[in-house]
Image (tube, rainbow, N blue to C red; front, side):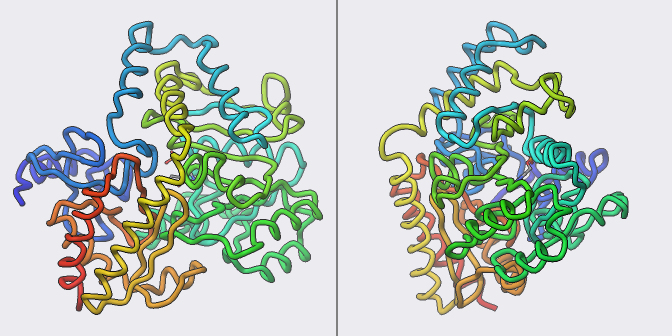
Length: 429
Ligand code: PMP
């Protein structure tokens, strides 16, 4: 595969940009080698600057649930952009967006739009602290909630990939306020709340962990967290930046039937534009400025073009059968991976929830962060490169979930599985 132009761009980028990228996992540090630079994307495909085509299971890390460059989303963006890119005043699309989110996720009685998932989680935790008058927060090892100081403690995603789950630059005094738990451990959560539950402002969790590969909750686990928070007056925050509008139309909270106090979103609601949101109980959300004293703001928040992209996307995913269909595709892919691995004599496990999935080099079900990090990452890295050479792009880290889109038709999935048949053989040590 010729990647000459990408190589040249990466050399220029490295001279001026830390690691040559604007977000760490893109640099391929974990899997080795160099990233490819994308010129354009269409449906299930990315096309790089050297003219190579890749079947894409990253989907811009989640937003591209209807495939790249969907005509309805593109039209909405172009139409809206003609009327101006940003007003710095209220615009009607913000109201439609709030109404849409609130209708699809009823626990979001009120909503505030922001510009990224990081902003959403930072704001939600400030609200939890402001509303409860408590300082401590609880998160889970291997969960990633963006790069806010309070969350870069035993974090997942890039932080985990690069072996610095707790970042320098986070003041110890602040990090000390972040308590961490092991995901899917019932007793650990009970014990922590017994010990200091009355000091905890909020517990934030990825209801399906997508930043330590893909870890679904054990039966009753989210209910257990709900009960602990309720009993101790702590707020339950579902970080649905990844799971929102992906594992079900109403997110993980709909899929598992557990209602959080606050929810955070990103990805799909922007349709690929820089967007995030947080929402929840009206009595809490009213405490946000300007109706309340807890401050949070954003010059570009509710940007009309971003709202238009997001609304077009949210329209598409409400089509009857959309989620059953995307789940069928995810299952076809994961079943195909399992068959191909078995044929090659490689032990893998796949885990799927709606339109997200994980592929582990492990012969048993993976429920916990400790199990996820114990998987054979070297084998994953070999598999990743063997797939890339065959024109299939998986997330460039063993600790990221994969994403399916409605543009991945049977033919695309079959082609992926055919590539995997060879790639598993190559990945064998
Ligand atoms: N929360 C979760 C669950 C995420 O997966 C991410 C990003 N992958 C974030 C928060 C941060 O979002 P952003 O990168 O848009 O700041």
